[in-house]
Length: 405
Image (cartoon, rainbow, N blue to C red):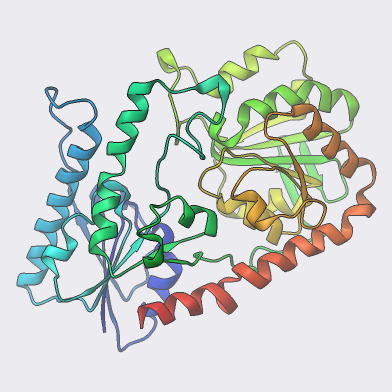
């Protein structure tokens, strides 16, 4: 069979299934991504044909501000369609097309390949109620922002209409989509490699002069970028009390200074700079280590030496890092927000607290640090939950391949 994967930052969520198909000689696997993002990519399987399209020009200055994002998606969709028409002229005709519609790439795929089966990856449907928008009173939206948000879903609505089947990684994320479309969407996560992401009692992690090991009071926090959507401000405001109560504790903070979700600060200020300034005189900074974005191997080592892993999120897309922390056997202290509650039951696979209650977070972290032996079973249950529901090779990848067939 012929398969086509389309993702502006390929492989994105399609890494494992694309590679699995490429290992089978009866399949032809063609993948398409944004040329700028594909530069230097080394993750592509030798049997995968990787093609690039050029990123589109920006929206016009005269475009209505509700439509700037949608116009950019349309332009991207046009570039994708033109690139694929070139492949079609050379004889490529996919049986199955798999795409992420979030950036507009999927807008015209059905028009280019009308005979194919189309699978779309539905990650998050924006709404001004019941999810991320207006969840945090520090960052409320204006009415104009909420109107713009409705238009932001335009490309996804086209994808919902055009696809044969959709995929969402969690049940909560599926439920964010309009009820009339959810019957088309299957819940299917991309999976966690629980063989690679596992507890390692003898792991070490080096930070400057420090060599951290399991058994030490190491608190970890991971996000793609350090920002409010992932509760970075709550973490930072908890540090004075946490470090005062646990004088031997060190905090490892993994993540970049960009903004993935939500608003940017004025004048190029980062959220790390902002919240460090707020508590600068109240913290022993020699015990707080901002590590930036780590190579994957080092990131796993940080999880494997962790005594407590803190995870916070708005009601939003569930992070891979939470599932990998659980798979690594971490004692997880997490915000009681959806979809976290879909994978963690309080005091079974982790300890939950109200997102805005930094004191409750500190209390639970200190409880684990004080009585680590009481949470051995909780760590084991966390890993068992990931193995049972999200294991890449035994659960998720077979489900993906069945869907492909």
